[in-house]
Image 1: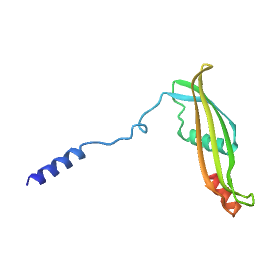
Image 2: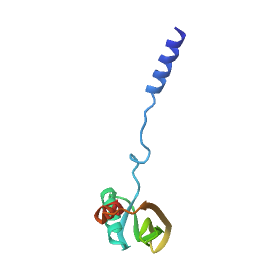
Image 3: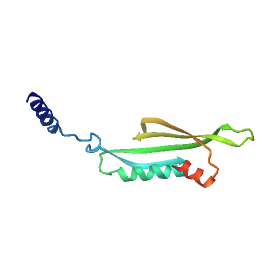
Image 4: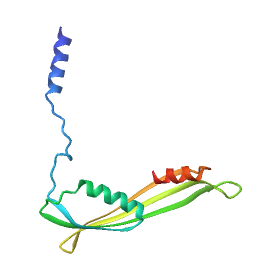
Length: 130
């Protein structure tokens, strides 16, 4: 009987807790005047589509966003013939926010991925795009 009361109490306590995502419900008070993208066209297009889907132009703070992206593909390992076996893909994104011609935030993001070579070059290209 004591276990049933404990289980009932735990279920009652947990059902009273309401989980809400913190960042989804929050309204931020800024919007972008302009977004300038430089560098790799594919990466820039992905970031631009992502930002345009999530931007509401209702904020009182008006910011300018500047993004510079780079993509490097390096050969890490080769076989005896000299053909590449392992590649490393580096994506570097530098961005900064400007308000009233003053840089208020600056950051750099680096993502790396190492992958094996694939004989089918079309499949290798699709893998790199992902």
